[in-house]
Image 1 (cartoon, helix red, strand yellow):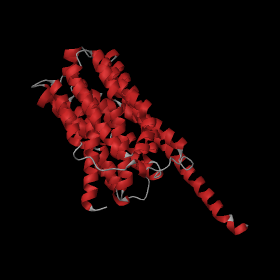
Image 2: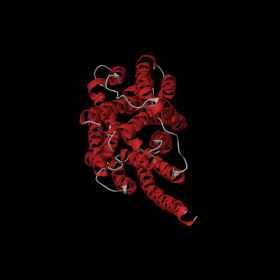
Image 3: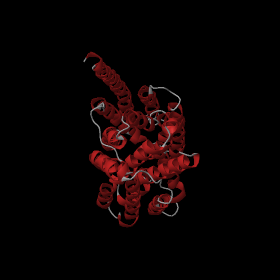
Image 4: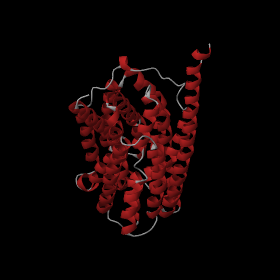
Length: 399
C-alpha cells in the first residue's frame, strides 16, 4: 500500500467512526439544554443512553457477521447514511422523551456497523507496521466525537439551539461519504475460523472491558451535568469536556504508535490504563475546579484511552475474521455502555454525583484486574496452540 492510499484509508476510517458515534455523545453534551425542553433528569438521560448501548450489544454479533459477509465497502456507507438519518430525526421529530427513546433505539445499530466495518477495512488494508497506529487513530474518533459534542454546547446549543447541533452532525455524516475508503467487498471476506480463536479469553476480556466502558461512559455522558451540579457554568463545563477529549485523542494515538514498536504485552497495557485511570475518575468525586480538571485529564487520558489498543490486540489474534472477533469484545463494551449510564444516573439522582463517581472508579479498578485474568487465559491458549502445532509437526516423522 502506498503512503497516499494508507493515509486515505486511515482518514476515511476516522470520518466513519466519528460520524456514526456522534449522535449519542451529542445527547450527553447537550443534556442540559435537551433536558430543559423535554424534561430529562440524569436518571432519564441514563436510561436513554443505556437503551442505545443495549441495542448495540444485542446487534453486535449479527452485525459483525453481516460486515464479514457484505464487506466493509458497502456496510460503512450504510452506517453513515443511517447515522445522518438518525440525527435529522432527532432534530426534527424529538418533541418528547418518548420520541427521543424511539429514535435512539432505531439508530443504535449505525454505531456498531461503523465500528466493525472500519475494523475490517484496517485489518485488510493497513500495513502490519502501521496497524496499531491506525487502530489508535480510529478509536481516537470516539473522544473526537465527544470533543465536537463539547464544542457544540457553547457554539450551537447556547446560541441557536440544540436541534441545530444535530443538523450539523447529520451534515458531517453525509460529508464523510465522500472520504469513505474503498474497503473490502463481499468477495474478499474470509471464513470465520473459530477453532483457533480464544473465545473464552475474549469473553472474559469483553466482560472486563464492559466494566471499564461502564465507568468511562459516565465521563462522556455525565461530566457536563455533574460539573453544572457542582456550580460550574455550562459553557465552562463543555470546555472541560473538550479538554478531556483532546487528551483522550492524543493518548489513543500514542498507544497505537507504541503498539507498533512493541513485540507484545498490549493487553497488559490495557489493564494498566484501567487501573491507573480509576484514580482520575475518583478525583471527580472531590469538589473544586482543580480536582475536576485533573480528574478529567486522568480519567480520559488513562481510563478511556485503551479501546483502540484492545481492538488492535484482538485483530492481531484473529486475522481470519477481525470484524467477527472484535464483535465478541464489543458486546461487553456495549453492555457496559448500556448498564453504566443507567446505574450512574440512578446513583446521581438518588444519592449524589460524588457517590456515582466513587462507584465508577471502583468498577474501573475491577475492570483492570479482569483484563489481567483474561490475559492469563490468552497466554495459556497460545501455549496450548503451540503444543498442538508441535505435535502435528512430529506426526510425519513417527509414521
